[in-house]
Length: 277
Image 1 (cartoon, helix red, strand yellow):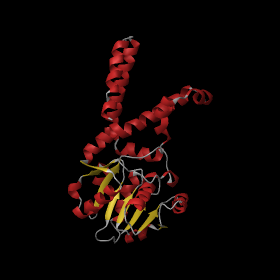
Image 2 (cartoon, rainbow, N blue to C red):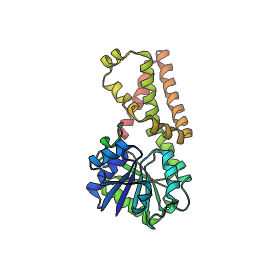
Image 3 (cartoon, rainbow, N blue to C red):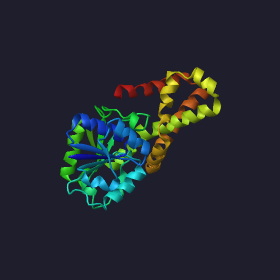
Image 4 (tube, rainbow, N blue to C red):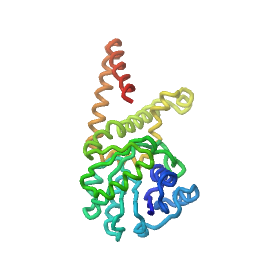
């Protein structure tokens, strides 16, 4: 079987490398609009060959690891190509409902909507990690509309990469992702902007310790990608931001009224999260 990866950045590159090490594809080919990404992916051995979009028809498995709006456009383009009869199409979009709703009906049965709960703040082929997906959750959504053959192929690949597969409704996925994945990125960007507006570079470098660096780490993430994610999951993200603002207001009120014993209890409740994690 031939694997085609559209988007050779962190996620697509890591998936290709992981498959090279763990799944028996006869060839892995890649597509990317960025010339530098194509050159680096070849040099780093992430893919065996760079192809043009219309050559994707040779592939048995096609993975879309690109921004959400691009996934929607590429699905439309794929629906017009003479793809292999049993082709398996996978996407790695961070939201699922909009992508699924806009997937053309003629390829929907061959489509396995997925979201690997993995990644780093870095981007590009050079950020690719061969074991990025190992022991990470791989969510698959709305399987009732996917053919059993394509679903089995995707699950076989995911199992070979040692992922933990979870089946989920797309509405449910997008709400959970807003709180657990998307809101932390908004908070990190907010923290970074708040500090940049209040502190000069010299003091930031001198005083930024582990706590600040950990919380600000996500602000290194690609803004273009996250803009698409936030837009696609707007309603759920706004609910998550409101919930976060409510907790900030509680903390602010307790500090303002010098109710530090109650603040201690509020923080202690937050500590219980790590018992779950």
